[in-house]
Amino acid sequence: METDFLVIGSGIAGLTYALKVAQHCPDKRVTIITKTVEDETNTKYAQGGVAVVNDLEHDSFKKHIEDTLIAGDGLCNKKIVEIVVREGPKRVQEIIDLGAQFDKDPGGDYSLGREGGHSENRVIHYKDVTGKEIERALLAAIHKQKNIELVTHCYVVDIITQHHLGYLVTKSTTDIECHGVYALNEHTNRIEKILSHITLLATGGNGQAYRTTTNPVIATGDGVAMVYRAKGRIENMEFIQFHPTALYRAGVRGQAFLISEAVRGDGAILRNSDREAFMEKYDERRDLAPRDVVARAIDSEMKRTGTEHVWLDCTEMDLVKFKHHFPNIYEKCKSIGVDIHKDWIPVAPAAHYSCGGIKTDEWGRSSIRRLYACGECASTGLHGANRLASNSLLEAMVFAHRSFEDSCKVILGDEAFKDIPDWNAEGTTEPKEMILITQSLKELQQVMSDYVGIVRSNVRLERAERRLDMLHEETESLYERTVLSPQLCQLRNLITVGYLIVKGASFRKESRGLHYNTSYPYKSKLMQNIIL
Ligand code: FAD
Ligand code: SIN
Image (cartoon, rainbow, N blue to C red; front, side):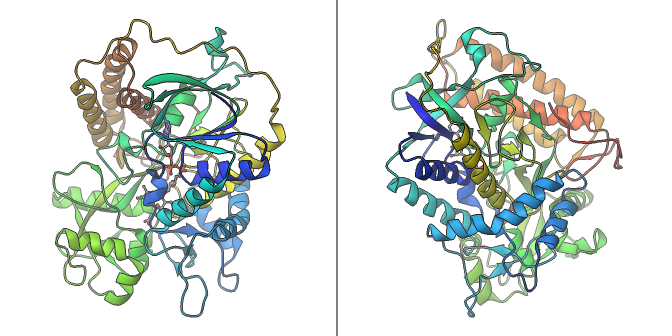
């Protein structure tokens, strides 16, 4: 297959970019590839909303910029923060113009929620299913656009560079160029090459590297792993954000249901097993301190009391308002026998968001020519050491737009495609035991959760690295011998991502933002972004 613009991923970043390039260049072909069904994305699960300066009477760009910089703990790129905050309102208006709904108050103004680390109410939302609504509006527009083809159940294995033409490519190669991707098309069960003039990676996060995560199963860090293999630049992988309040279910692993931070924004209080509202012991902003602070406080309370969760007390909140703002959360709690009016909700931290990723510049360009990255897989410089709540949907919209503007300038539609060889599957055989893959995945998630979680130490990181080395060796050998499946590729990518998180964490000789290492409990003036 040949296409002009190739987009990997059908979340907010990929769809926004695809729609813009397709509308701007009606004579060009735009192809979106996604590995399962079209809407199975992190985007679909976003609850709280989009942080954006909307009400200039009470809020200002300056305050949103300040809040983002404070959360980022010294590592944000100030220029990028300014860009995202100032261009954000225009991008949000575009998604509203596309038909996405956001709640309004009785006076007709947007209803603004509050989340940790924000000095003002500035989170616009559609009930507690904001991401689902955005995804719906974008997909509806995509389906109307004639020059877009959306291919589902197509798993991208690797990006194609001159390495595939037989040239030596190393970390010091300065002109690495992307020619498209190899993808496992589950409709044909073949690995096909898809050649493109411009490729955008919008592959989302990597929460599946951990035992419990708010992310769905698609979040396996594929884009980051592919770029790392292709010798592109990856940055700040140690900054994994744990959401403080995922719904706790005894013995359940994998995707955990989120209890939005906006619930605390509306007045819910965290309590430990002694019924104590413990956050005041940790931070003067109490339950609305930034996520790193709240997640560490919960972790410390759980360790101190020997419990696997704490409680979220919503019993003093107005039930009618709760049901109106959080119908999905209300119903989910009810379905497991928790009546939020009377009962406390059991919650525990879960891996939620990857602040680092593929290093990009202010136009979404990666270090590889013709390859852009945006959304959660990218490291733009906005989040620094800790993402401010609800800044990521905004970031995805702003950088999808910037990548669109830049890539439309550079596309050379009439240039001939290189003669790229077909995928070579010689010598591989059908996998005999899927258990080898599922068991290794469990081991990886266990290692990452036990040794590279909210609190780290040098000993734990060294131990994690040794365990990952073994998993890497075994999985590479399986990869060489076996007919590829998405499961095997995802395991391989998650091991790479785990390795990058451990490496970033080991290089960072300090504690900062989301990275807390008991061997270096303080911030160092010397540490900057870590590029791998
Ligand atoms: P995604 O939406 O995750 O899309 C990734 C896409 O890439 C998918 O289509 C996937 O199939 C595809 N893909 C991946 N790998 C491959 C491959 N190898 N081949 C083919 N396709 C591939 N942020 C906020 O700002 N506000 C919120 O309120 C908020 N709430 C959240 C709640 C939850 C439960 C979660 C999990 C996240 C939340 N976030 C929130 C974060 C935010 O939702 C994500 O960061 C954002 O949606 C990521 O969008 P994306 O387009 O980058 O990736
Ligand atoms: C939430 O609703 O708590 C999630 C918001 C986010 O991750 O930005």
